Image 1 (cartoon, rainbow, N blue to C red):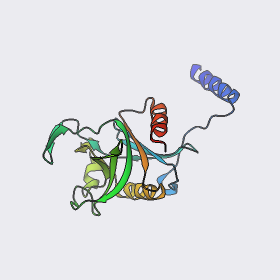
Image 2 (tube, helix red, strand yellow):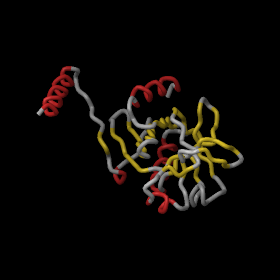
Image 3 (tube, rainbow, N blue to C red):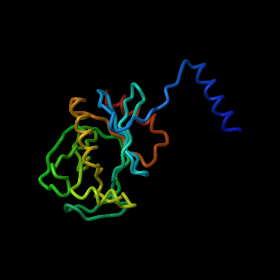
Length: 188
């Protein structure tokens, strides 16, 4: 009963402050990219979201993030957990390694403060095997998505004239404020 009362009180308070738009999930099959879309990556649940900020609609998708351990890869020794931070996708690169980066080698490069990083969003030739596993902390730090999701993200990138804000967080607590501050700071 107390949950019911909380909902009713919340609705009444919301009604006094004009109206509140609740987030609405849209199936991938009916999703269309829009100008101003943002990407949110939850590295705790290994889920991604593309959000239409103006309408509060979003599409959710599974993903793979970095291993939670120190690795030695491409001549570097580092913690492979995907960093929690604010990024911008600012380029679409093509990688020659078609196993690690998928059949087409598409790599949406992540930038921080205008500087290119080693991190990005890409596919993988073994995506079926990787996504069937219970543990989805498998990458060397990048965000791995399935082919249909990568196609959708590349369309979003093109529509947004080569810039998409991305937020990676371990859990989504407080994401609204963090994302708002990043948008203001980046002037996008």
